[in-house]
Amino acid sequence: MKRDTDKVLVIPCSGIGKVHGLMSREAAYLVTDELAPEDTDVVCLALLVKGDEETVAEVQAGPCVTIDGCGKACAKTNVELAGGKVAQALQVGRFLAAHRGAQPGSGSELTDEGWSITREIAEAVAEEAERLRSAEEVA
Image (cartoon, rainbow, N blue to C red):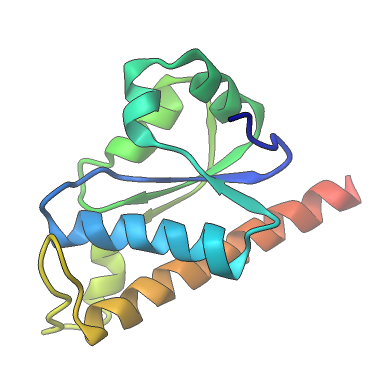
């Protein structure tokens, strides 16, 4: 399915089995399904890493926001390797640092606390998408 290249692309890390990865993916879906569906679209990191031509072309065509679960920054790194522009790179750990002692859940299920922090991440992405879209309209 072809995506609207005018949208801000949100690329979460894969981090399967890790709570930070789950939070990054759920934040991306909150943005693209609920908070800013008209302005954003999600990109599968695995397709980008694999070198899928359509996915690489999409990433190269517009601004990207990455959400990484850990300091390895796989989403950010792979967008850059594919020739994409990372407008904003977020890390789940930075949000968790503001909630010392938080118990966000497991790699397969978030707690209420985890969902609350995930929503904070999603709101940050939605704000950046709105800023980027407003800047495009002015240009």
